Image 1 (cartoon, helix red, strand yellow):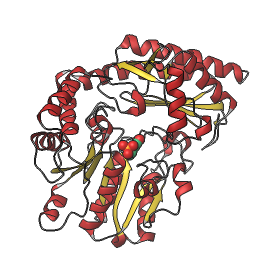
Image 2 (cartoon, rainbow, N blue to C red; image 1 turned 60 degrees about the vertical axis):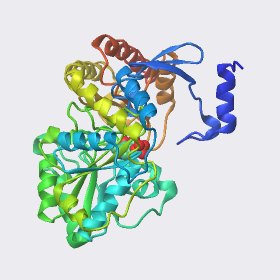
Image 3 (cartoon, rainbow, N blue to C red; image 1 turned 180 degrees about the vertical axis):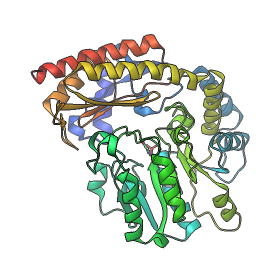
Image 4 (cartoon, rainbow, N blue to C red; image 1 turned 30 degrees about the vertical axis):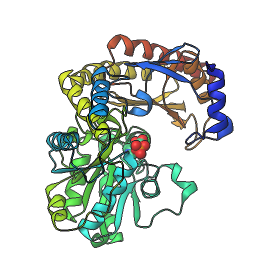
Length: 440
Ligand SMILES: Cc1ncc(COP(=O)(O)O)c(C=O)c1O
């Protein structure tokens, strides 16, 4: 039976629920095939994927080496329980330890589960209960990770888990402390110490934070931010859990974003890029102190599908692709081109308040007025102008992720300059549409 694309969309709307959506308002794309940085819809339109879906398909769609590894593993051993040993599980663990400089890896199937496990581990190892997180953060959709997130998506499920203490972010374009770059004394770090003292350092197990904040505004911290935070946490013996679910595996040009800052966290949580989501995979990598503790203490966490051999085989293949195809070198090269083009767009368009970028991880922040920095849409909301931008990008078959007054540019890491230019030219046109709507 040949079902038309329209019917497929209708069936999906009739029989399935869409995440993070008012169901009656969804306008889903029927994705039929994909390759590299491109995908096709049911009407045969070719789209450029300027967001690697949700910043996860790092090696590009349908990467042949990853597909081959998946198929081989399916034939060899498709499933083994979470306490079984398999070759892919062991091999990937060794690789994760090598690239992180930490000690042992624990597997989950997603980023949110990784953060749940990391928070549990922090509590088990320290015997303390509170977790510091930041307001502009997203750590996942399950109850604990959602509570830990600062993102507005936590509001409808609150009250969440107890023990979460939030601090402010290194958001230099709109500094929460009103600081100017030249005279900044890094209150974004020093106020954390005050919060620690008010909460009681002896009660705080860990700080959970994204190495470079993703969906909550692509906040690239100043060079001394992480070294200062690391020193502060060490002073009070508080663990640092670095959430690299989005920023990890080459997105910023390194295996993990905090490696750009020369610090080592106690735990790294990962998902997305580890397998480029060609199979679901996530986990936590822990340091020696934690690993030693767990030698003679119970690890109170585990999932039926964790360490799935096919997922781990996909992970190993992705790691090979990153190295063999020199993907991070491409991130550096294309990242420089992207950065230059973004700075040009900022200078050219009245609606562009700020652009933030590191590697192939970037975002455009739109304003009504550059001088007042009034956002083009409010936090948690939208606006007619943002609607115009989205409609233009969609009409040109450029796929990206947009929220409030921001939209992201984070394509697969294998993108070429020609492909990047193709997409950025469309972005340039879309920004002109917004300028015009603002009467600029
Ligand atoms: C920084 C960060 N942490 C955790 C998650 C949750 O990952 P998942 O959707 O795989 O559960 C995300 C998802 O976007 C993320 O960006």
